[in-house]
Image 1 (cartoon, helix red, strand yellow):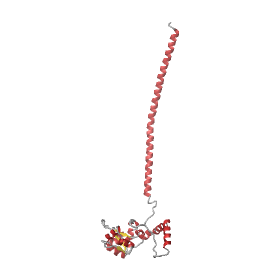
Image 2 (cartoon, helix red, strand yellow; image 1 turned 180 degrees about the vertical axis):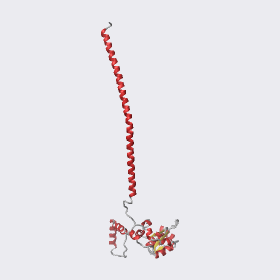
Image 3 (cartoon, rainbow, N blue to C red; image 1 turned 180 degrees about the horizontal axis):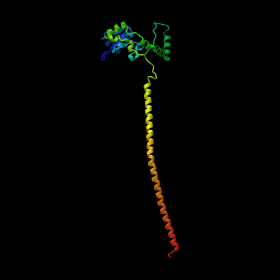
Image 4 (cartoon, rainbow, N blue to C red; image 1 turned 135 degrees about the horizontal axis):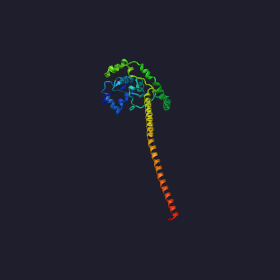
Length: 251
């Protein structure tokens, strides 16, 4: 708020205002920074949410469920809902000393643990974007509150231009991912086919070389066999001649 010029508004006569007025620490520092603003309080949380929608540097402090409901009405993509100051809660307002307080507490705790409250909240908020498209622009009283902030032209912007309905995720939204996946598979198939062709061509080139090597090896074996045969033949002939000479004698 101090460095970037943000302004904080809070609902009048609310517990959030009491926390800022009576709190210490971060709440006390927030209250001191709010005192320099022209507008510090709004009539209700909805007016504060409309100010956030029409101004860039405005924040509203309030109950989480109320803020969540209003942000869903006006388009959740236009807001950032923080959970740093308040935690999520579910409660029903009863009179002091109500005899049914313990029964309500037990029922609420059972519904919360079973997840029924979350399911009811989700089902309730499903139709809000459709209603937001048909909602009217900012009312005259809200325009006056926006004029105090100093930007009446932005406050009179039609509500339909800044709200978009939430859409469930469908296969059409994921079409790009599937297209990329198909392109990747196609490129992989092309590279595999190219590699197979290259391997086949390399094998064909190697086959003539192998056949030539086998032929040369056979010729060498045959040549060695012929040489050995000649040597053996000569030895046999020599031994035969020697034997005949010995048998015939000196004559």
